[in-house]
Length: 218
Image 1 (tube, rainbow, N blue to C red):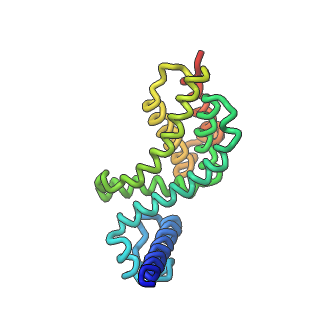
Image 2 (image 1 turned 45 degrees about the horizontal axis):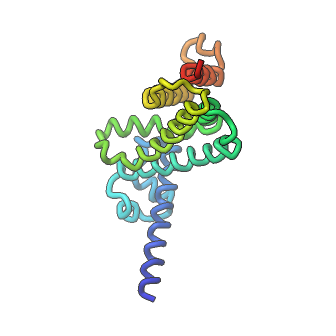
Image 3 (image 1 turned 90 degrees about the horizontal axis):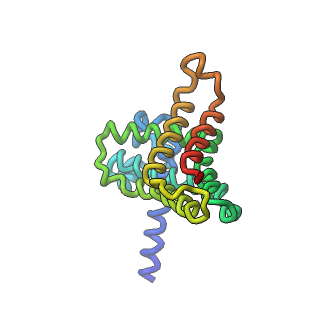
């Protein structure tokens, strides 16, 4: 009986912790990471601020956990939707194209996520967070890397992707280019008149097309 009670208490604690994380994501989206206070999060989660500090000793610790959870939810949802059963029936090159296409979906349907990631990066730099504290966050990003690497390897085997492609360079360069473009389009939009000459979606499509052309087997 005592063991069961301990399990119930731990489950309740974990549930409250998850509620605090969910509340923090909402607050960070509403007010921005920099402008959000732990008291704001406590109010949103309907708990005392002492409870928030019980689970997360500092704001950076909570910000990192929120980023981990937000990434898991957003990217997990998208990959579940677009990397499905039909994914196994297409070439390696087309698999890479479908994965990179997720960035276009992020821009069109999940602008809040793109804003959050930009704010998160800026906050981490400002607070001078040690990279070791970002290990859990990095694991989620590495998950994306693994999927792209597997698609490239499959493409080498089926002949749709060139054998001499450096997967690491391709992954880092392409994902950075796409995320940076999406962040520019969402956060800064049109600054000069000529920015309006080409639609945002067409710019993303072109970057993806150039990436696929680069790795395509000739």
